[in-house]
Image (tube, rainbow, N blue to C red; front, side, top):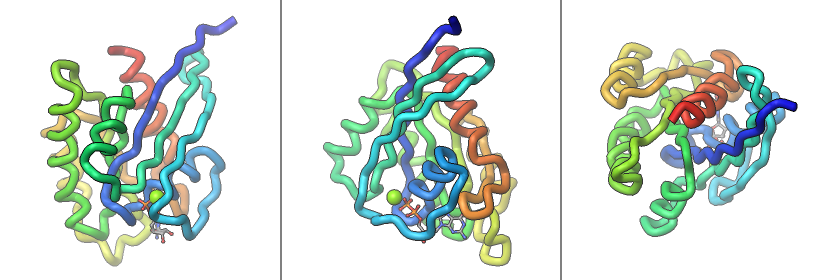
Length: 170
Ligand code: GDP
Ligand code: MG
């Protein structure tokens, strides 16, 4: 029987960037237009990654929790998906402070994360270039993906799978 691993992943990013849409797209391959933005949910998912069965617990944060709750979520997680919206520069500017807070909370451990620029289908409204996303990811030393929860383009599963791999490597 294959080895089994448990990985706790938390998804962070400003409200409205598409965290819930991304998680649900990853889990169901479907896009659902509206979620209660105040809702925080945890999902369980099993995937076969590099011949290993990985059990994920995924926390979809609401993005409007207070500092204490947020730090609790950060302590809980083994790995983090930070999401911004390519049509919302403010959401991109939220990323670096989130990483700093993660480092603060996880000290002295290294923070395992991936960066996702969502809503890649809205090219006409783009405010953050792909190059800027890549540069930020290089600064944060993490993998970078652009994708669309809406159309599924850019392979929505890959960030989650890569994050599992990195958590397992640590
Ligand atoms: P959250 O607050 O980060 O969980 O964001 P939601 O998942 O609730 O999404 C916020 C809004 O953005 C909703 O109206 C979604 O339909 C929309 N949305 C999410 N992902 C995408 C995407 O990839 N493309 C487009 N066009 N809209 C998206
Ligand atoms: Mg949400």
